[in-house]
Image (cartoon, rainbow, N blue to C red; front, side):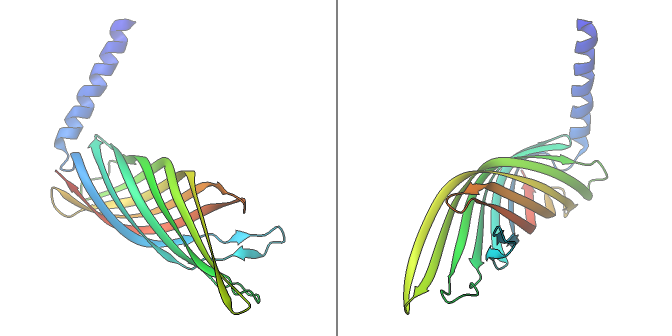
Amino acid sequence: MKKTKRLIVLSSVLFCTAAFAEKPYEGAYLSLGVGASRTQNWKSNLGNADAAFKTGTNARIAVGHRFCDFKIEFEPSYIRLHKKADNNALGVTGHMRALSTLGNLYYYFPVNFQFSPYLGVGAGFSSIKMMTNQTVNQAIAKVDNSATKFTYQGIAGFAFGLNDQTTLNIDYRYLQTEKLSPVERAIRNHSINVGISYYF
């Protein structure tokens, strides 16, 4: 039984190593990306939006390593959104930003080297800051709230080979945090990203 297990493991390693050697995109890489972000509105118990956000921007940088059809990476990312003005006399506006530090794992479907769809998952933490401007009696009161929350994300996209060391990446990312206090709402962010990965 032990010999059989060893043979299976050795065969898997040899197969993976052979496949890995044939691929032009292998080893360590650096990735840069930018995109548009949309955060779901925070709903009140009555179904109305008690906070609505405009479409914002995001940027990410990642370093990682690809082995066979899997890729692991360390990814800091930044999201900035502006809050829409409330439909009331207080005129509450402001912005929100989230600096996330995540570890991601990807699986690349073995279609071909020039066009590779992939799926990924990630987990880590986000440092969130919300700045609210509230107009009261013609005076602006600023409220600054900060928190660090556990965060996870799901990823789906495509990689297009530009040359033997560079790929163009287009993907969708869904990121969600733990609920923020005292509002008891989670950030649920949808992003479309375009990026470049360079393999060393």
